[in-house]
Each structure stands twice: as structure tokens, then as C-alpha cells.
Length: 363
Length: 226
Image 1 (cartoon, each protein chain N blue to C red):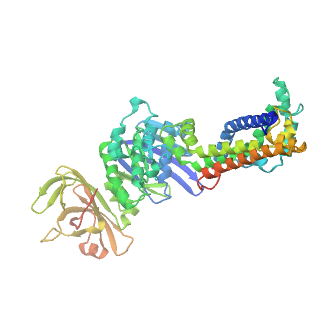
Image 2: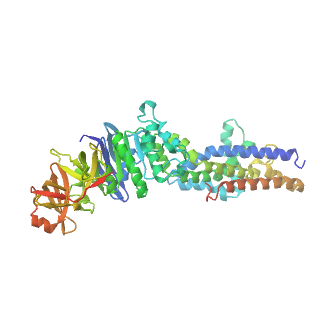
Image 3: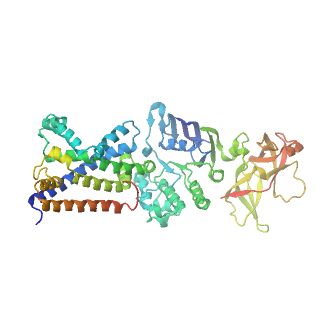
């Protein structure tokens, strides 16, 4: 990973200190994940220049936006960022069209990387242009807010919990649009969230923030599989995998998915219709992975993969242990009882068979 | 014709005074209100209080101090004389200065409320959409504060029309120069011309009622003067 977004920020408030040194990839979606008060939003506001950290160094793809040691501070309106706030925050005195044009009109024509038609199509808002913000639903307003940010042709897109103010139906309405942004645009996106499902679905890179400090920062697959982070202790602990659909068994309605890694293993999943050749994102929960000494005998469990034990870690619940596994280059997590672990005599380096009870398709 | 030439002169002078005062106050009051609405400086309290003083002071007190300041030995009077403008006491210019002071809170406070109600968010949104602070002020703040400007203009104008004590203290009673409607009514009553006074007083009553009607009907149940 070439770190193209660098942000060293130190900020002290009465009840809160932020002290992070972030290095994020210059493309794809990086999620800042943590509880409220962990400093996610402060990081984002500092990146946009809306807040000024006591000590800051911000470099985006080679361009220094802020360097407090040299007194450099580019004011927010001169930073090529797009910012999507938690509430859509559309200008109430302008129509949807007027809102979309606000940033678009303020950049030089040759700097415009996206047309209004493209943005409207991408976010599905072409039919709303003449409306006033007050007449839009929450989901529509947020889509307009995202399109408005895109139309300022940012070199960095920042989103501060853009779905948090919406109900779950509206969230489901917007998530596909965010995935499209991810697939179709080449703008790095930093996405702040405290919702694990959104992060699992969208993020490529994960930064875990707690009380103003970055506990971890890395590719999402690896970071979710780390046993030393609080994430692994949650009920929803698990890993996110990306696989390519390589085969279809029409008789049983099953699809074959090849996992990344040197000799990528196959997962079989039941699904009504998938495109062979497409890439899918999956979540495998730690509690859905069980371990056996060998893949012997018939079983109703479809997916049984040979794995090597990487590490064992006690779970918060003393009856359980967490085990991280290596399935030919793909990290998996398993949560089994301590009793079973002792019966199997689980130890690092051991070869076992992982039985995956269920796989959740994300998106 | 119930109103004679001097009455009409007084009405015209009043309209001229109120319009000019309102225009000056919108120009002066906007930055003051913006500052008061947004600053975290300790000066916010003292300056806010000074701006609000005319709300509670008897007009004679304001008029007295203005008379001293504008007079030949006062600091404003000295300045105007140094600039070759002569003394402004007992002149229309003096009246305008007095009215600006007297009506200041009626313009500044609605504007301050309107600016305060906008909050930080639209300004931040505008900044992330490449609008400079001035651009943001013109294209976001001013349109969003429009109801505040309307209220401020109406109140500033109406309050200047209703001015009496300050005018009498610093303007005297010079026909077509400083004799506004309220003073004209006072003169009519002094001279026992009750019928003349009736016409002018009635006109002021109707005018004031209509102004307040505009204000309250236009507000559609929204509380506060923003």
C-alpha cells in the first residue's frame, strides 16, 4: 500500500484529546470506525480544514494542505474536498439544481471532472432537479448532498456518517449508490461510521479509533481478523472476504466463489442469480465457523476449508476462545468453546478443517 | 384639504428621514449584527448592551448626549467642523445621526437573531463547496437571513417615524429641515389646532397599525423577531 493520504493531527479540547497519525491509501474507501466521541468526526473536520488542530500535517496525494510546523494552512474553501454531512444540509433557499450547481460553478471549467448529468445519474436524482430541499425525503436529500459534493470535483471525498440520520429502509436505499461511487469513481473516500455493517459492506481500509487514538489501521480483511482488537470480541465479530464468481451449478442452484490468495480456495454459496466473473463481498461471522481435525465423513455443511491456526486468544466470555486461521492466504476467524479447543488441542501452526455454517453476501 | 403645506412638508421630511436612517442602519447594522451573532469575544456583552441602550434610555437622555457630542465643542461637532461641514446640530444631518443611534437596536437585533438562527452548518457546507467567506455571506447568509432584513427594515423605518424626544433635543423645530410629523403634531396641539392634530395623529395611528400588521401577518406564527 502506498500511503497517499497522510494526516498527523493533535487536538486538545476540554474533555477530549485527538492524537493520530493516519496513513491511508490514496484510492478506495477508508473507514474511520469507532464509538461516538472517539474522534472520527474531528479527524474529518481537520482534513477539510473546518477545524484547526493545534499540531497538524496533512498531505493528500503529494499535496500538503496543512503543516503547522511551517504555518501552512489552506483554508477550507481552497481545499479540493467534498464533504457529506450527517444531515444532508442542503441550502433551503436553493432548488436541488441550485444546490448541485453551487460547488460546480465555483471551480474552473477545466477542473470539472464530472458532469451534472453523470452525477444525477449516478445518484438517481435526475427527476428531482426542480424541487426544493424541503420537499425531499431524507434519503433523496442525502443523495442530492452526495451529488453536490461530487460536482465540486473533489480530490478527496469525506463522509461523516451519511446514513446515521436515516431509518433502515432509507439506508438500504442509499448503500447501493455508495457502492456505485466506489466502483465507478476514482476518488479516495474517507467514511466515518459507527455502524459495523456499513463498514463491512463499503470499506477497503479500516481505521479503528478509540478515545482519540488509532488502535489499528489496515486493509479491512486483515484488521477484522486481528484478535488483539476489541472488534474480535463483539457478537458480530467476523471477517470480510472478496471472491470472484467462477462457476455455477444450475442443478443445485449453487455458485462457486474463488477467494483471493496464492491458491485461492473455493466457497460454494446458494443464490438465485449471480454473474459469473463478478466480484462479491462476503462476511463470515466467527460464530459460524467451527473446527474439526479433518474433513472426514459426510456433512450438510457445504464449505469445509483446510486451514492453519495462526493464533488463539481468550474471548471476553471465558467459555469461548477466538482463533484466527489462515485459509491459503485468506484470514478467517472462528469462535469456539474453550472445551472444544482443549479437546482439539488447538495450537498455532496446527492444520485443521474449518467448517463454515453460513456466509452473508454484502450488497 | 385638511393638511396644509407645513403638514405635508413634515410628512415628506419624516419619510426622507426614516428612509435614509433605515438605509444607513442596514449598512452599519449588518456587520455589527454579524459580529454580535458570531463572536466569542468578551466584548460581545458590552457592545451588545451599548447597541441596546436606546431601548431603555429616555429619548431626552440620548438627545442630551447627542447634543453635546454634535455641538461645536463635542467630538463629532469638532470633527464635522474640521472637515468643513460646519455644525450639524439643528440640521437634517444631525437628525439623521440621532435617528441612527436611536433606531439602531431595532435593526441590529432582528438581524442578529436571523444570523444566529442560520447556525454554523450552512457556512461550513459553503466552504467545502469552494465558496470564500465573502461569497458565502452574499450567496448563503444574506438570502437565508432575508426575513430578518425585512423585519429590520420595517422596524427601523417605523421606529424612526415615531421618534420625538431625540428630534426635539437635537433638531429643534425648523420647518422643512427638522420639523417631522411627531413634532408637527406637538406644535398643533400647543397652538390648540386640534383638528389639524387629529388628521396627522390619525394618519400616524393607521400607518403604525399597518406596519405592525405587516410584521405580524408576515411572520406566520413564527416566534421571535427574525
